[in-house]
Image (cartoon, rainbow, N blue to C red; front, side, top):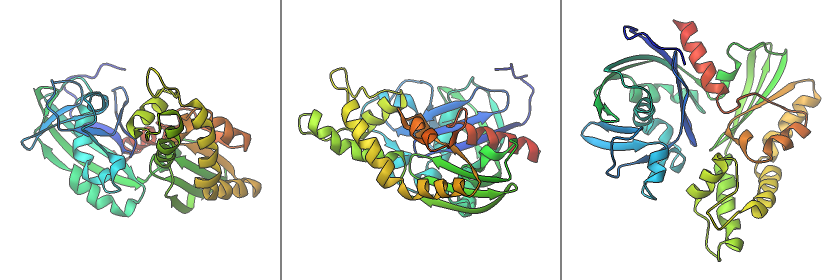
Length: 309
């Protein structure tokens, strides 16, 4: 990370308020990627702690560590918008403190037609306490683009391109010709549906009890299948991920496979790419899993924000 001069007035940023994780990339700062968990429990002034509008929240990993009393963006379709101010401030509360932030950002949504609603939630002048320290945060939303399109910014694109974005709540299928998007279809199955399948599959190794979704997610985000110190769910994971791939993802994967047959390159991004063994399944189909697939979108959002300057 380059040292940022204290007199910098504006900061350009990319903000991806995902169902599974919140990603904030501010020019000159390290990427902040945190789970989209929010708790109102009483906590110390840890990273992610936000006091705003007379209420206190903790966003990210500490919300998970606090116990089971937390919410997540994945709990409801509207949370990407409704929680956006809290998660943005929570991400800022993971960065070195500044008394003043003036941020010009580009964000993304699975349905960019709802961009005005997201803009209304984020924009304005906010006076939060971030990790115990007062701050003035001014936000201007330069643009809201369809989710996944950020990964195109600054890349040399093939003439024919199909992109699959395996997110937490949805899988997005997009097709481009000479850099222009021809169609964009969201499918209502993402990593969350796999986790829900795993909660049921866990019963056979969990004493007949359903698995806890947040514990399963936490293990998968760490790249393993360790549900607890006593239980490894690798056996049920291997069975379930194959069923999820062949059933829940059948339509977008078949569409991408057909596009490849017609001469498209197929690029893949999204948090699903980091699931144990999942990238290998995609590569066997001839798809290209991009480097840093989870962060490809937010990196492009920052690049676009700087270009719009």
